[in-house]
Length: 460
Image: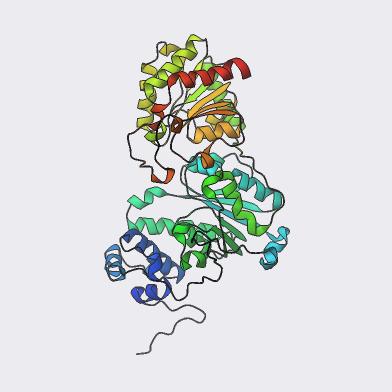
């Protein structure tokens, strides 16, 4: 029997255990993370062009078991681009100079396709718009696509700098390995058709790194994350960029750092929240139906409970506003817990008939129309807060344990009341997102009322 020769120019597919040991060292395989093992194995088969031959889930588990070895340095790891800092911590990889850029990127007119990857939440996506605006200003001829988590694309629905939003369906991870791989393959093939000249990876997930490598762009840039200080992370990107003092700088500026190797001159720091004519028309109808004219908009809810204020505190604030003759609009998402929380706020109001509840009724661009036309926005650390800042609507914001430097309202008129002035807060990187502790409850109602009244009586 003739032995099968591998195709010319094609890497031979080794048995997965041996191939993974050779290509992906133990420095990137966590001994207690089988999900990560499976991800790396999928990347391996994908890279070798053999996704159809991926083992079944049971076989993957049998492959994973012998790989659970102590972590060790990989002989291929390149440390020549690192230096030791005085504090003993590794500094960033050296930034690539303009002269070392591929010829494609030296001439801006050559860049036709750009992909920006941001696999995070709504507010994170909105805060990438300065980066998108900067790319469009410097590469006006380029088509800029984004890769986002499903649902967050509404943030950019009306953004004219974005050509197309590709979506990662997070629901597939609960549908079984076969469905997950099938979905990944469909997405990968759709992205591959565009032959990207430049990919900017703003995410720290291995999925994003795999796309940077497997889509074979002309050039790809990622961030140097301490938790991704591995040869494989570097292998997946053309170059990495450090985020200097990331915890001390706003997310907008940290995002823009990824452009450093490109040495662009036209930099925008403006966050853009766009909406369209149909959003205006829809909101106009809602306002006419409810006789809404001049109003203060309150969005009391957030993604996590620890970012919210007690319902009775919001009720007291609303009572004060309605006594002063203000019309109050309440907005929020469609999640049942959010709707119940807002209903409880209204129940605690002395004049619930004077409170207009639009929670669960608005798409994000429609919410943007309402925020843009509000006298004042009152809210917590949430996407609505970032929307108000982008739209330059004056705001009173209640803020908890999130990093203030990174997440405060950006370049907008606001008053911020920080719970840390009234109680001890956990460090931002030590927050238990499942906690039922409402840190904002430490902020006194009367101080919020005073802050709101300053805006109402002196600035509006």
